[in-house]
Image 1: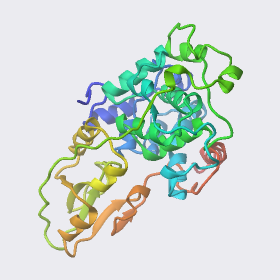
Image 2 (image 1 turned 90 degrees about the vertical axis):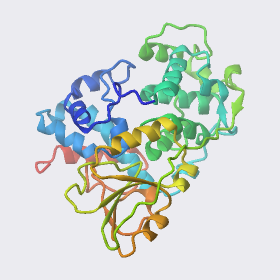
Image 3 (image 1 turned 180 degrees about the horizontal axis):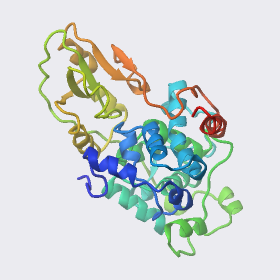
Length: 371
């Protein structure tokens, strides 16, 4: 079940959460598990709101760019990963910059998947993920470091495991982040020692396998706690639905897991369909909690109907209809009128090998007179 107190699904509560952001406090404390994080990621990932919307709303509320650069930078990471995904169609199956160092094993460390690695702060975060569908970003990095850099597992299956459980599961952000931590999309591997975990998770643990110097961690053999692995396999429980009755020639607006924006084309006289394609979820399964969350968010769109089936099947139900959808690399097989997504910086596109190359251009745009 979705915790609607932690993650409300009605649009008024979501917009109120945007307005309540303190971007300055976020910049100071975001790395701590109890820091001033926004908890907007599930709504951005599901396409209810965009990074551009959040940025523009902060500016409209009077927050100055110079005081919220860290906040805007973190928003920009998401757009950057989306641009990588658009430029690298094989993102999910390919190490982006180089073969992953220490990626010789396959599977997920079973202790990590169960939240029993022996690292208190990380285990608590994993148990919360399994219970709620949420994990703080710093703890995601810790988990990836344990699985890939100490557990020596290739990033793909652990990334799939985390994606399955996350309410904010975004294939680009998730895959790129795991590759960044594991060194497949960065120049070095990310490690965190016990002191780092203690600081940001507010634990006081000593004597664990992470209670070592960074040089020792870099040379460490796979710790006993991480040696056993499991193959991650999962299925998505999709609802059985009746084919929607659509009048021939009537326009159809398609929504999906990544686009649930209630304001997009809201005045159009058209059929609105939430399309859940079994083929999509076979490749990228998500939990029952995520499907429940998606259904609840879709309720913000008046008149929407749910169809479990493939795009071609939906198209066959509406001969002569024009289909409208939003661009997304996972749905390039849709045919019809494709609307662009809302980017923070629409003129900064294409592949950048590092975020900071992307951010330099974005930063110049932020401080330009016409921004």
